[in-house]
Length: 115
Length: 112
Image (cartoon, rainbow over all chains, first blue to last red; front, side):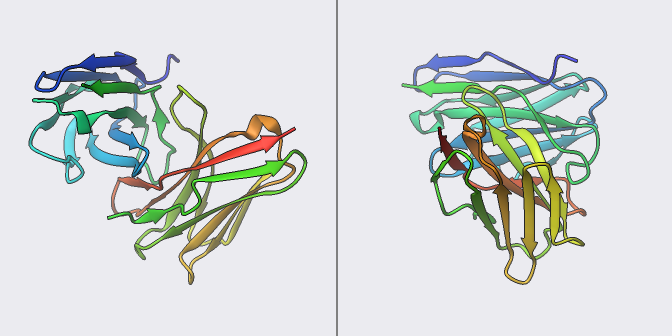
């Protein structure tokens, strides 16, 4: 099993540009989560999907952020336009069941730098 | 709104001694708690968990204690090893919801 795969590993972009982060969850997992890690707030839950349907996006900081899961094997997190304060490590995680019952499997993250 | 708090950003202990990492939560609906460990340039990995019906869960050198009345849990590592040096995240969830809330993490350094 390849685990949760995120791409790119690193992204450097200029303020105002569109950024798209990608995630391939573990096959068979029906829950997918996007988290953001910052020094100040640690791991923040941005949004999670269950069976490809967004369940809770209350953690998405602004309308500039959007996430999609068009099928069970792919999800994207888009920031448009990006700002320097969006610089962080973004993690995708998946779970075979409800996260409360099955621990999350995290990808290695995408380090985003917005200049 | 930080529902899960780890107030110590860092902890340093000597190899062979006990490491105690602490975590507090504010949401009384949380009924399941986990600890994750994170090495640099990697995602967090699951370490140990406890449900609210228990007050202790042990797995080898790792023990998690839960004090529901104080809304506090702790992770004990004994004996600590240099390979335990990592960032430890506390996480909590509510069975009726599928989201997991994480603390800010504590960086543990175990000195040889």
